[in-house]
Image (cartoon, rainbow, N blue to C red; front, side, top):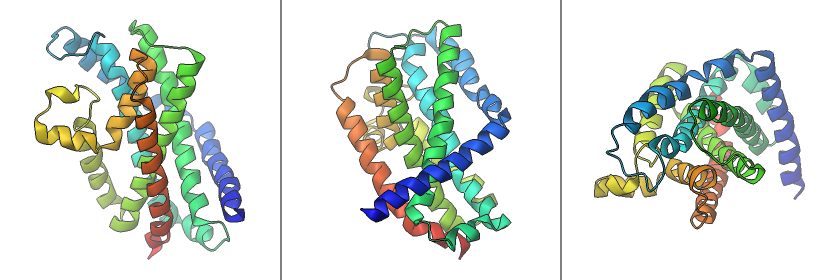
Length: 257
């Protein structure tokens, strides 16, 4: 119990440090708005006129908005492994590892920081949705639910990126592998089309893809208000995130080896 309390407390300090970096350089937030603008403003607007994709009673823009939010969060989280490699090259990581700080706290701190950046993407998506007249649920309960799912999803993909960083060791390899992993996960999910229109093999991939459960949870909270699958979505994300955080804590010191 003492180890867990210490991990949570020091993870908070790590997340606070990462948040200060973001506040000192808010230009990152501005650049992160470009991707959702392109996806919703160009891709979404164009395909919403085709009406070839079944969206179960909602507009196509409503359907893909949770998917684009998920994509934005995943792209933020997956490159935390790159910052881990940068910290190793600058000597910061080695200093962290020789302190008595639990390895789990270092991982949770990164996860929380990615989650905070992910929350900023909720604000961006809401603003874009208002401009494009995309009907979402803006109630406090829905916003809270979206924050929970974003924190869990960002945590999972941050942990995954740190594991990748501990394996590939170099920033150049990480950049290539990061793209190879994120894009297939995005397209093998229900982010921009329903699972029902996928071929059977891709449907199976989508059902074991954590990104699918993140999209599904956000869509239930922000668009459909159908909560029958929501406990499953949150439960799967929670299990995946806890597992990946433990594995990341084990792999984290291997970045410097």
